[in-house]
Figure 1 (cartoon, rainbow, N blue to C red):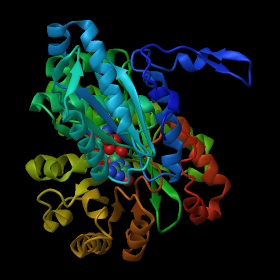
Figure 2: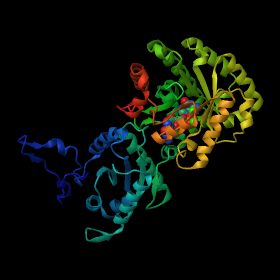
Figure 3: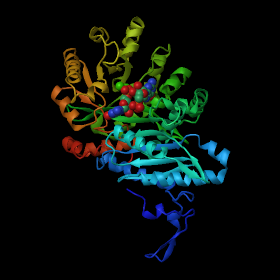
Figure 4: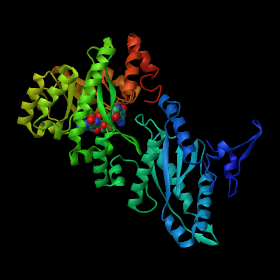
Length: 481
Ligand code: C2E
Ligand code: CA
Ligand code: CA
């Protein structure tokens, strides 16, 4: 979508438009524009993206790409030629950018020399990068400012929406982070967002401090992603996943901070609180939803926490305090953790079993996964890594791997859960193969506790219509989660 045409006027200042219908000047519109470039400002940008998110969730648009643009060495112009010349340049850049905006694209000025372009027609990250590339080329032609020819370049950070993004600010934040990364690589760089760069953009030491502060202020929340049993057609459990509700940066999944949390040891406290919180939540759901009396929670355990001598006594205490049965809790451990400390691990698993706690192997297939270990360790569930699941309909090898893991699990009397199921065809392929349960955006993204509760209410009322609910894509997609 193009911003209405008066955005293209050459005027340096914006004046309120006369609205014939209301018979008043339209000041509201004015507050949503940047006076220098006449482009939509940050608020208008956020609103535009915010409106697209529910459409993307419903599948009405192929995707949302956010391209964060930032001129290289802009400060040199403002320092060298003065602020007036810099303003003139920005005005010219905005105009050039506006000219390269296509159908279903929206451009706004974010701050200083930063612009954001949003495309609602991008079906892939490749397409989004191509847009960024097109803009990069357009900026290369010289600008004439105060009679001087200036050669400018622009860098970009690209982020593509997925169902974990619930608000516009999160997408803009990640475009910004990707852009900061581009800047560290030189000029005219286009980077596709990677959550690991959050640490890079904030700085390691500062992030450590922030994590400690966040723990003190209880900024971590638990999100719950449903696990759907294909055998019973019911939601059999939820995986509890940490989210950091940062007052400034918004909601952040663990990939942004977990490495640092492990390095600094904060992860232990985080995991403890998560387990306490999740147990209380489970207890309340069991009371609220009698149809879900066997609902379980799957909880990730970091290796630091697993190797902590207090592990067993603390979990025991947490279960008692919250009135939760061990059989309703599954701990997710990674393969590498199991392989590295075999004797100790065997003992620990034994003790956990005494508490009736279930054990899952997470990300199965990505490590050294020797099938022999599956027999040796007394685990209940194998979570098939999403990397195989996502290729299941595209390459035969992945389908073969998933199917071998599923049948092995069955022979050994273990439950198989396929992670990262995003599409209907993946869901159908997995049903064909006969995995026991699935988890992924196709069912629902990780949900706040309120939304997870809403979901159970919905399913409880329509117990026999799960297929239809899936068909309607109602689970967790209907509102903000
Ligand atoms: P994981 O255990 O493999 O968790 C599944 C991850 O896949 C989650 O990412 C989830 O949001 C994401 N996901 C779910 N469905 C889909 C899908 O259909 N497609 C794609 N592409 N992704 C999907 P999340 O929440 O960002 O967590 C990342 C990892 O961080 C987790 O991977 C887990 O290893 C770790 N983690 C999360 N919460 C905690 C925690 O409280 N403690 C510890 N120690 N680790 C945690
Ligand atoms: Ca997990
Ligand atoms: Ca996993």
